[in-house]
Length: 67
Image (tube, rainbow, N blue to C red; front, side, top):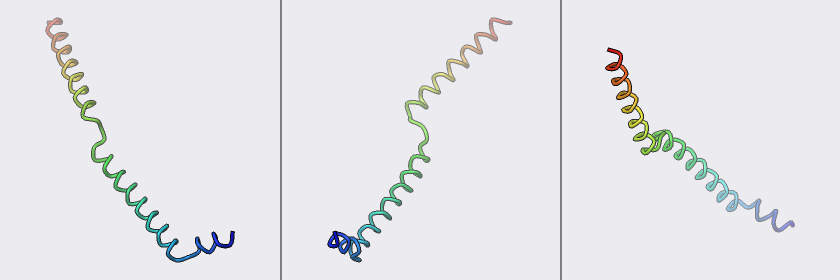
């Protein structure tokens, strides 16, 4: 048990753990920015455009019908 404590207390191990944690935080920061740059899936955008066009067509038909 003392050997394990000595290994964990060594500077090299602490530096490796520090580097791993810093790299992990940088990855999470990058991932957060990356996902915010592209908030929606392209397929969802295409589907939303189709729905919008369909609603516009229905609105035109409704206006023509009410004339």
